[in-house]
Length: 113
Length: 115
Image (cartoon, rainbow over all chains, first blue to last red; front, side, top):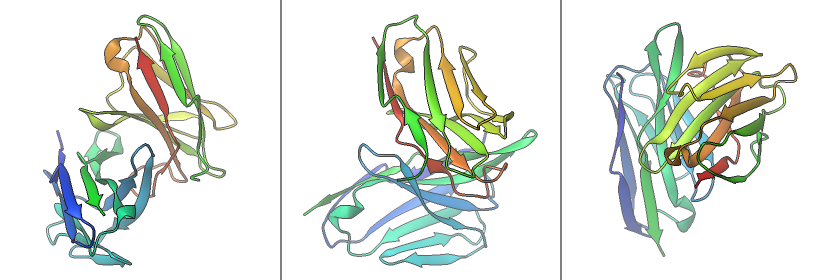
């Protein structure tokens, strides 16, 4: 079945350093969503990318959708302690009568002050 | 605050028992989803309801069942509980029927511990 993998599983950075997580799908995606889950919290929607090669920015966060629409990345510039959490990508799984949203394995970001 | 309400926050029960988790979606959202999150399995989609009807099924065990009521709240029933069912159960809601095009809004989750 379709798989959505993220690397790295875990990243520990010093505050102020940059951070990137990569999301790779085994199949072409029509769109991709990104979520953030703070420790002890629930996933919160960040953004959705739809177009091939699309780049979107939210302050220090830059999201990119690959040209082949099989991969995506999230880059955080100058991390802050508030960026701590697990970042998930999620993409559609087309199978059967309905589509399902498949979440990636997640990348846990730890930021040391 | 996502607007999605889940109760209870915590649940501790013994193996073999049955529990019911409750979810009220955001106002205006017709779709309700249930996800299971455990340390080694990540976020696993269980089931989706849209306006009272089952819309999509994921990796939901036969011991688990769900329903969505006319007021759009949903319940997830877990029976014959096993130790491996211990996890965080999230409910999410969205406006649309298709779960792949609109953002999901998650509740705070119910932490189930089976002893």
